Amino acid sequence: MENEKGYIVTGYADILFSYYFDDDCMCTKMVRDHLLVYVYSGEYILEEGKKRTVAKSGECLFIKRDNRVNMIKQPKENEPFRGIFLTFKRNFLREVFKKFERKDLPLNANRQKHSVIKLPQTPDIKSLFQSLTPYFESSIEPSEEIMKLKLMEGIYSLLGIDDKFYPTLFDFTEPWKIDILDFLNDNYMYDLSIEDIASFTGRSLSTFKRDFKKISELSPEKWLIQKRLDAAYNKLKEVGKSVTDVYVEVGFKNLYHFSTAFKKQYGVSPSSYLQT
Image (cartoon, helix red, strand yellow):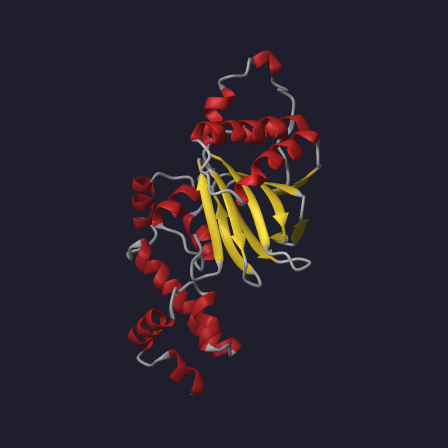
C-alpha cells in the first residue's frame, strides 16, 4: 500500500517487494539479518565506511547481518526504484543447516570479509528472481509455503556461488560483548531501541541494564537524550549549523521534541542560542 513517504512495501514470509516512486530515499540502518537483494529497476547504493557499492537494474547484492549501512534507493533512466529483499533470519537458517551432513560442509572455508557483496548473475540467481518479479504486478498473494521455498532457493544459490557463504550464513554465535559506551558514542544518533542496543553489544536486555548501571546513574534512555543534547550544543556553538540540520543529525525525531528538551537543559531555545 502507498504511504505518505512515497513508497510501497509488500511482504510475504520474510520476502519484501519494495517500490519507491519519489526522487530518492536515503536511510542508515542496522542490518539485523542477512539480506539477499535484487534490483528490479532504479538504483541501489550502499555505503559502509569508505566502501561504496552500486547495484543497477538486474543486479543482486548480499548484505551481512549485524552491520550499519547507509542505503540510497533512487530512480535510474526514468524508472523508479523497485527491489526484492529476501531476509534470512537465524531460526530459518538453523532449520536449513540441520539438513546438511557434516561430510558435505566445506569446513576449511573462511567467512566473507565484506559486509556488502555484489553477486555474479548466475543461472540460479536469475531463475530465482525471474520467478519472484511477477508479484510486483499481481494482486494475488503468494502462499507462505511458496515464499519459504524461494528463501531456501536463495540460500542454495548463495552456497553455489562461493563456499565462504557456508560459514557466513551458518554462524549462529551472538555478537561479541563489546564496550557499551564505545557503541553508544558511535551510534547515539540512530533510531535504536534499548533492546537493539543490548543485542548489538552482545547482551540480553537484563544484562545490558545491569551493566549500564555500572557506568552511569542515568537510565539508558536519559543517557541517550543527554548525549544528543551535548552533541547538538556543540554543533550549534562550534560548527554553526542550523537548528533544522542539527536536530536530525543528533537523532531527535522531530523539532518540537528537540527544542523542548534543549530549552529544559540549557534554559534557552536552540534558535535563540544560535543567535547569541
